[in-house]
Image (cartoon, rainbow, N blue to C red):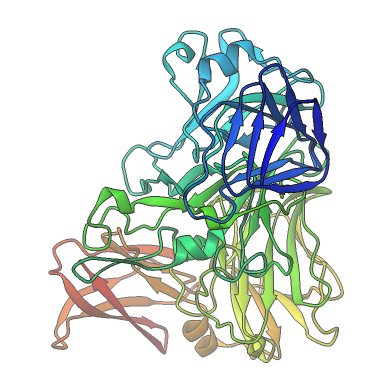
Length: 551
């Protein structure tokens, strides 16, 4: 079937066609509630426009049967909603169409309901650089040589007066798209694991397994890729951060924002809107040629099979707890001001260690309140801590708290769907107190700045506290992939701690008497040959052993 549009048409529902041609002097507008699926070509000799608002986004899919025959070779228009700029109110976006000039977008954008904000020579349009963890906004001089938007890459943008539409002009991608990513957290420039990317299609894409069991963003980019010569390319996303990190502006109506995390524990299908930007964390092995021998493998993939016309808002609108799940939040407040939270989720089949796609590290690793894995901790502060149901029997979870001295704060148990008879207790090991969070909040004004783990622990169920429990369950010993040192966290106060390191032959190669009353310490591994070592911590009368690998 071929459709030739001769009259002005407005599409506010879903239509399917073989081909669509808009004749010269004619127009077709796809309303925010409408969608078009083509099994062939989209040819625009007139005007073809897609609209959106803050909650609904029009979609067009070219080559809906994914046979590679469909094309869109003539430019169309996507009027994409972008939030108002302000403190904490930047929007993360990307180009839903290919070949849009950044210069013309910034200087002549006239979609009708909004304009791109300017301040002096600066535009409210910028890029994120993971090599040094910085944002750079385009200026009146730099924008002229900026080229086109890179579809699949994310940008920050902001409009005036409550948000509105900005106009993209270009062609709809009908085939797979990729976006290069980087891992730079170990460099000397303040680099980051974070990469700002965006949906490159003028349609929604499926994001999690509830949207599609296999053809979804997280699964595709977490799957091994087989290459010739028996080379396997692992997940491009860090397993400790296997999630989508979306910016939610104005979180509490106070002109602040926060990153909302979506992964496999979300019970509803997740869809990413056209041109929606979000962060992902790159695999820390990304620069290791043993794992990623070719630069072409250091990419995030957006497959055409991910495309769908299904979706709602831009998925950054806050989330509700699933009433049928077993979970709760711990929220950190300074007086009545919400700072952040860490989420605990419980289900069959999950473990006390890292479950990629269920556990998720926090976006900021030195801020507010986080938790740690009860087992096999690698020093990642978690925003989502997913565990098996056995955790209710008796488990202790390190809490990571960052708080300045002499500022009152409290930690509250909220949005709980766990059984009412499961006790949730917060222990302050320095003050030797236990607070039953089921009944009351934990409150404190610290006499010194707080950071890391070692002082605060969350206990579920009937936990018996004592020195042996502490050393076995609550001290973390690990060596990061790119670290040249061993990290020890959660060391007990007022206890003599000694660290011994043995090689595979049982020979003592390193011995350190650790400093007293420092809950976090590091021991250098420089000079140790590559290999497997046994790290033994003697704390008082208790002994904890852990294997590490030195490369």
